[in-house]
Length: 201
Image 1 (cartoon, rainbow, N blue to C red):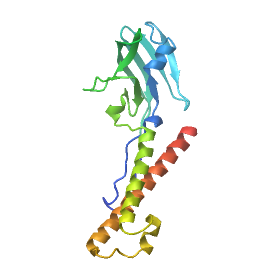
Image 2 (cartoon, rainbow, N blue to C red):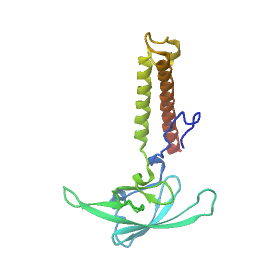
Image 3 (cartoon, rainbow, N blue to C red):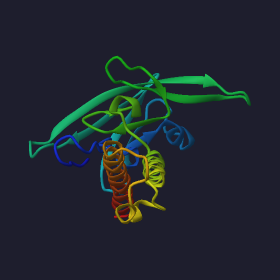
Image 4 (cartoon, rainbow, N blue to C red):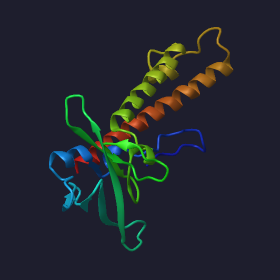
């Protein structure tokens, strides 16, 4: 993912979208009664991927195989500790303890953003809604710069003369900034549409 411009001119967001990753939700497992000690079952996703989950005292164990970069399939086995917190309305709420090295966060979901199922923070994932919000923030910033340059919007920028009293150096810097920000916003929007297409396939 990500994009490229001329050298380092354009700086695109290359973070992976959380919704693109296979994930397991401890709340969902709990609702289905799948955290009871001594169980062994298969968990599947719509894309055909699946793992085997075994429940142990205070933990679950995940068994699956992966294939990366055309290398032979590799069997993976990880243990995910469980934690429970009291709810205000009574009962207890389950949590995963992220098994990432040096992490240990208490989270509801783990994502397969690489070899292991880890929390969103370990893989530096972003939500689709965050990317969408960023696209509109960037577009709004570009439009504000264009209005400062006397144009109604970015489409009218090159048909609009330089504002009186503005130095050419300042004008050219703002034009470059407006173009860069607008391109970043369009890229973020195209990535969002691509993510939606992938999720529907």
